[in-house]
Length: 317
Image 1 (tube, rainbow, N blue to C red):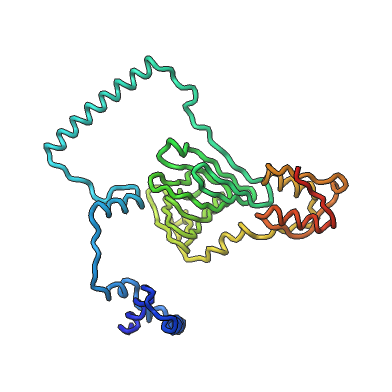
Image 2 (cartoon, rainbow, N blue to C red):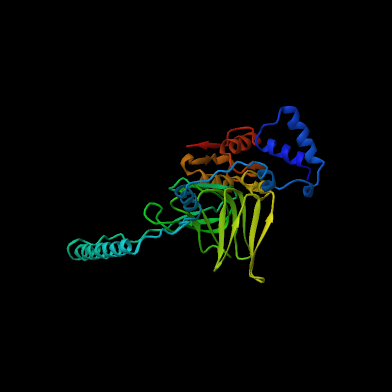
């Protein structure tokens, strides 16, 4: 807790150290116990300068993160009365307009949003891009269902069964919510995380960003590098630190095959990449393959298979 160490720490955070000082400081960190180091708040406290944000800026930041107002606006009574009268008049006009539309306008035939479903029946990793740009990697047997209209609804809602990795496209005005998928719901604005939803366990590992998980009236904020699940017995969230790379390395792992029919492998590849219309030549219809294929690289998979049999056995039509 030496003040000189704290001052050096502050210069390190501000990137003001020379290369030589930086190397010495990093070496010093490795020889210190965690309890010997000052907290970030203590380091920041060394600086007497302060920065006060305007109320409007604070409100905007808070709303972008939580979707709620930081401070409710207080209006004089006479202004509120006029505002209430204006609201009442507006509601009457809207009501008349709605009745008019019911009587004189034809009722649209397609009022319900048709859910969109993505399923991965293969042994490979299936990648999906949703309408808003959100990218999802589906593990074998996983299913994700889009249950709201991303264009018109106030929330982007999906439902998950199995395991998937989400890279949610940022939209500060429309949260991305995973509902009715396990022990808790997940609410984000834009982030990346791995989520497992099965009858045995619901588990989320956050890579970056910030998410809120909710079970009934309980909720918890999860930060990068943390894993969360819900203990049904003790009625509480369990949050621990975890290696995020280990939790989601299935996205790029090699798949192992032991005497698997080539027809089955080609069928799986066609399910993942339907636009290529892969075709196995007739003389290899009864052959099998033993080896490894990358879970997310079609060209490399085809090269490995063709090389294994010393000829081109799979064609793109």
